[in-house]
Length: 430
Image (cartoon, rainbow, N blue to C red):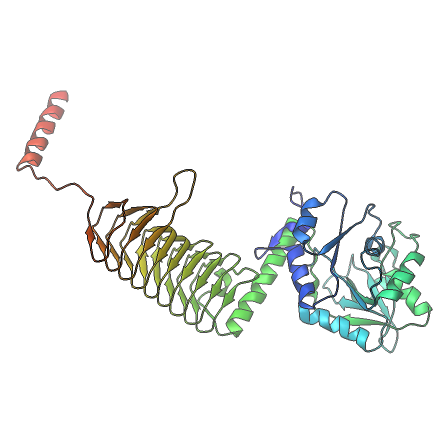
């Protein structure tokens, strides 16, 4: 990857590749979950928590990596499903099909696919009845074997007892001098056990080994997510410019405009409108809300029913009650706004003094005049008003009007005298 970040911690749709694979595994409700890492992979171990980790002290191939997990799985009987942390697009449905092949009597089941270019992939060798008889790595394949188009994805399900009994028998007499997990197939078949190959989609088993492949995985995920959201009743004005996170939730009847980006942690109810060029992350939005265009909703923003957040507004760690409007050029951070509040253009909550954050409370029915600054901690009482341009640094009583600007003075004829004076100065200088 040519990056200081470990490969499997690179994100796809706001979630690490490892995170995608762990999410798919957890959906199967496994009795145990083990992540095999290198000795120097503390960041990966932290990201894997609360899953157990096992260390592969030497990099001697896929079979050796699985053997590293043997102690963590000691005493376990049942299916062992082997996944790869750099293959983030596998679906739970596909994994269930692999496990189903075990239920039909196969001691080992392998997920295969038909790539456009079989080149570097191991080939799945099958018998006339379709059963799997062996897997041949590309570098070890004969010309006839290399002509096979059905390839190994690496994903395997096996009976735990069979897997850990056969793996120590696998040698390393091959082109890479490694212990191939795939050699377990031939050993199992040699004992008269049955192996099965399950056909999957090439797009699901895309492995990521470069920045270009990471971008390819991102594009594939987004295409899948766009189709899924539209199929669930979400309108995308221009699907190709909408970007979802792995956990984005959107209710039916919601409309998403062009060039909208969702970061992690967004939950949107039905009937919401997100206008173009908006960015949302860590947000909950209730039915009937309207957001944007050009709005930024940051983590902790909670928008109630029928709220409006308009152009060039930023909301962070703030709750907006039903029907509240923040329509123009405002920053609302660390705040609680009641129902029916109107925030005038250019309003900001002054929530940070350089050391600590403080909260602003604006109760139901309050009208905040344009270009107001609310210096937290401060409370504006129910149905109160604040005059435009005011700096509110003390609590405002319910139904009161708070004004903190100086009185307007007017000097008759001053502008004309000023122009004449400056014109004379300029003429003298010229």
